[in-house]
Image (tube, rainbow, N blue to C red; front, top):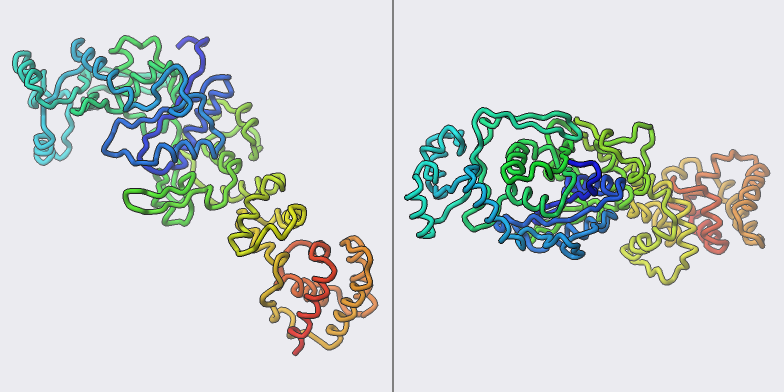
Length: 509
């Protein structure tokens, strides 16, 4: 491929269900490479397998990409000059090329019925349609020209298969793996055109990549075994000079063993593997996604980028602009990357800490409303001031309620077991006096409330720890939360006094 060719990459999912995080990472690496080289990122929907088509899946894929900020330059809903962007709409273009391959001796018509092939599989458990048995099966090579013409004239159902050469080596340079080679005798004669006239992935991907002028192909390493078929098709169709550069991405592996991460692993270990909730219209099953679990898109993208790639430094937090700027193929690992959900949660914590409060506000309000509060009763400034105090403690936005509900409603119960055994009448007196002291304050800021409270402790002769913890429990209900004087300031004078007066009787023996 010439170096001055414009970078055009494509993400080409099948609309068959939820988008696995491996699929999103493929889209992300395509996107980062394109943007790093001022190129174009294309979304093409590979819907040639109509039996597996799921209504709503295409829209879901587009929503996932939008949530992640991976907006295609060309797609079915934003077409460029290389459309259509759904393979099913390109159907007429494929037969021509399949027939060309037959005419040039690189492919053949196969008339075997599904039943006949099933029969072969029963007789030969490792059956594959290939060079060593093709002459014993019903195809244009074994039947001869006359019989083939008759069957075609009658409209006999048939597929078109590639005729894989014997004992040749097919090799190419993978951008991640270096030189990769295959023995053609080990590869079967893949179907290129199905009986319904739809192409298989093998034919469609080559025809479309050429028609769309794709320059680089990033796809999962599970597609490596198909590479020799695709390389031969580029060659046989006379397009070898235009063949894109290839990169086969390492797998995302199970956290607790070997093999590719699957939806079942997520179900088993209790974490999402889809970008967003997927509601399967065929089964009615709901699979949770990272978005609905409470992940910020920035955290999800950051986490995915570092599954199998790094920039060579210790840096772990990258925004999209930095990823685009620093992305390079030579920093993609050849080895699979183990998925670590604890690490994924860490990314989310880090991004919540960094996010501007105003950006998180709509989601925080949604959490409050979910718990029955009318957010119209609170100012944005008030909610944001609380967010400031608890942000460091949030793994998910949903945790806001657990960490901050006491700002919006009085504690329903107190951790009395932490207080009662050491409670004295002296402590009751102390807190009643503190309530009176607070009532006289004209300024209500933590900076003046803290010394006031601590001076009162010093006067009482009691220990700091004996009184600070009960004070926190009076306001919060338990031994948690941010700085207790910050809580005091935010709750306001009347509320704090009321909470002290309500709690003291609960602590008395």
